Image 1 (cartoon, rainbow, N blue to C red):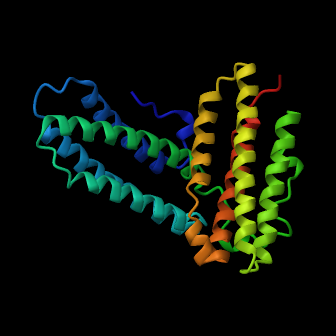
Image 2 (cartoon, helix red, strand yellow):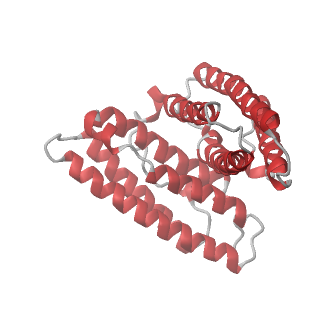
Image 3 (tube, rainbow, N blue to C red):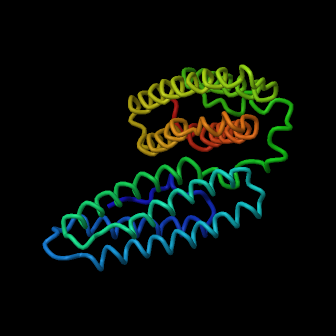
Length: 273
């Protein structure tokens, strides 16, 4: 069974309850998959796909309406992720599932997709809902990428690596402000590559530390780290090339928002050795 754990809570009651329901649908599909396919499950599988499509549509509408209401800067990115989910689920409605073997294949693929997408989307994106200042307020600060004492967690290695992550994001911020189309694209690719590699190194160090002290929150941290890495791996470079300043601004807001939220609300819970 897939657990809706505390690290999936975002603190907004309606959204949290709807996430629980989505996990229930995931477990419903998982239970069906765990049973031996000795008979035709066409109708059961068809109903799960339809239920997922309907409920996800309702949930995404509620979530997006809430984000619009609070002027959440992540709304554009959220809409894109929701659209991807809708398309993926609706693709299953056109798959031929008359054959029992095909039913097994589709259900296996569906469960794997749902499990990965839900964890990564909730922990990588939804946790930021309501946590970031409105878009028009975010980047007008004197230096939004400054690493302040508020972000210190008291573990020297991790604090130093967090400072380096902020430095890399600040480097991207400076590039956005002085973007030169002739050379800017190559520079941003270098920064993004550096960010991806250093982030992976940092997460490895952080997880090794947590493992060494037998920290009970390690698995939740791993899920959050995995979700963030997936975000970095899936950055749309073609969008950056076509519309550099706007897309980079949105990306920068996400990167900085995720780091701040993760450090303040997750990393600060890591106990000192």
